[in-house]
Image 1: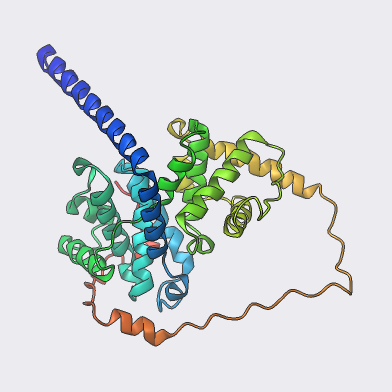
Image 2 (image 1 turned 90 degrees about the vertical axis):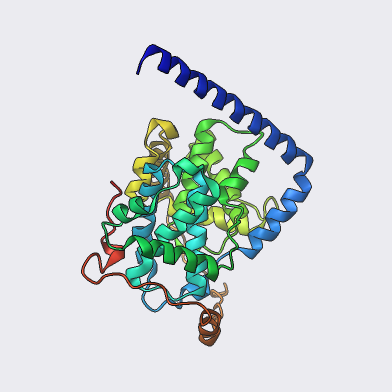
Length: 345
């Protein structure tokens, strides 16, 4: 590149940066002016776009242990494509909502994931960051033809009745951290939010609850490294938030996804994976030094039995009968798609 071309390129970059800064200021001004209306709309959309865990349990071929395989693939693809954080959360929401309404075969699970990531990227990211169909095919190790991604995209959109908008966990997290934010807190809270994507226990929680709980846990880890979680009173927060905090405090004790841990061990994410790992070691040490729990007395009541939730299978079948059958993937390559998810090139 000649000096003149280099100067022109730098001028374009500076002009683009200035335009983006002006756009951010205008958006912030509009958000402040219409804050109440935005909050009401987000609350309505949040409730309308929560997936149904009971319907997802009715999937004949998909099992919950397959979910981490697909999430690992999506995390690495999302990172390699340099997409926005909210794109990943929106893609997972689209997958879960689709699986709440349609029967998904095991060989189509990765195809649904790629179609959801593609839709989310078109909705949240810049045009030059959206992956092409060819890139999607390569990421799936040529298990699906290019036209199958287009077919599945249309099928997902028609199944969800073109309702793509969803206030993601990342959106609520930014609102919570607006007045009290520094990089390590933001990155650690985001790390906890992405950990929650891997587990069934968090699917039924609304995004605002998960974001609030992640912020509470992240603040505790960074500001109080005693290794013991404080008691979260339901009077200080909602019962759902207290329950979500309790679940997060349990799930971070287990080793997270290697892809996720590698992602958040980098300096660009403040190495929060290492901070969390150090905290977990401290907490496990604290738990091991606690005295044993005394046996319950004979006068204490036993645990209550939770009534089983019965789901009408016919409702699932009726709600999905109006949609076309998704495309069939070739049987030769990657027939066990969820087990053969390859790392994106």
